[in-house]
Image (tube, rainbow, N blue to C red; front, side):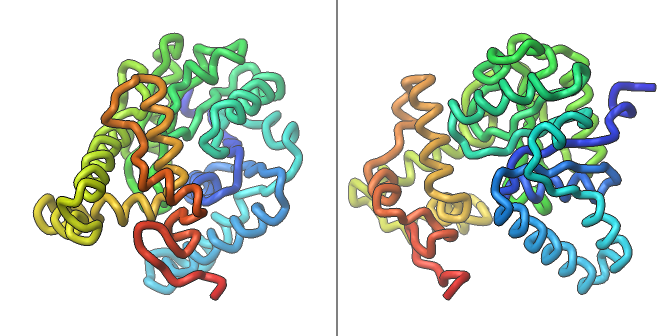
Length: 293
């Protein structure tokens, strides 16, 4: 039996937008999933949101009602950290993009998880060595970065750390494929991985052009959508992802590299201070209808 065949139960830490959908994507492909969050409300929102996603697939004829109910039933939502982790063969951390918080979670995961379990981080920018260093199993720690929304986006970035074993990398790549995703491997650890390093440079240049009066937000987006065939311009993309997510991602890369291309812009910082976090807040570089309106 290969290592991937030994994975029967997956634990996802964090029931936010990313964690909830990562859990459901795994469950869609037959895995039992323990979805942990310390907030009962977050777990309830995750269940409601995932049911809505799958129900739309039923309405479009892409899934049957029975398949939907079976996939939803394979996700066990819990507030019990140790219970969620103890029986898992593979753990995916999906808590907010804060280094110290992730380090605390990894330390607890190392204490509670089975000795054979792989510990993966869904961080969008933080290399796994920063988290593996608080564990006794750095060879079993790896980055497994999904894209938003995980139930739709096909790509998964797998980034190995300096001590990540070849078996851990192979198992993680195989798991991504088994849950219907396409993995790419970053062979050496680098802040921001592939996509966000490229996007970070684009975000910086787009904001520089606007802040120095060369073009409007709308025209920069229009230029990238029509001229570069991007499905969203950089400003709409930042709004969609969450300006706080973009800010933390850029800040981490900038602080680690010192590269001015990734330094968060003044306008982005101003939006964060004002609470204009993009689509989820109803306002960012653009305004959006509030879901609770």
